[in-house]
Image (tube, rainbow, N blue to C red; front, side, top):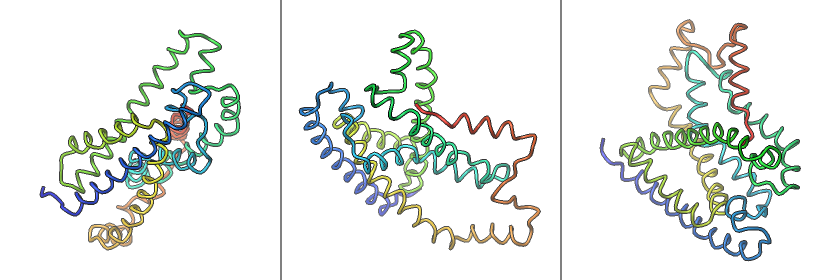
Length: 254
């Protein structure tokens, strides 16, 4: 596949912008370390508990609505055996945020916890905490792999490069600004990334509508509905248990 020069320029500009914002945020992080009464690790991991509401909303949204979320939801809706009703990510994440905000956020902040494991460690000790940590650690590793795989697939389409090179490049940039500025770098770069995601998805709409492949699918659905599964999908009674199980699997607080 030939290298797309326009796509390469756009990606380079994007990564330079992200890296520059990460470096700027790292300076802010160092200033917060000087003012913070707690440990420096608190500034690195949770921004010294001083991230404002707007930045917090953006970084939480960008963290959860990543490449894996977007591509997974689109795949579920497109799949004839699933459909929109089986795209459980949006509903599960909504439940997660509501429950976490109502019942977990205030107590954890008042007790100065850093992670969801801290209350278990304080009450039950290291052994129980380690047993609870392993599933969370494995899920996070797989979640990162999911995001990088989605990113590699997207970048390979834009640039014409292999997924491996795309993943290594993206991971290197992310690791660099994270090590330099901790959560501050992550939070402020997330704002830019969320705007890019929002604008890019809308830019895809006219290309999707005008693409000949899309028109063929639309005509097939219109003239021969028996061969085209509805986008909403179907939830049969015998599959209700599986639907609930997958929904609860996606509802998490870690």
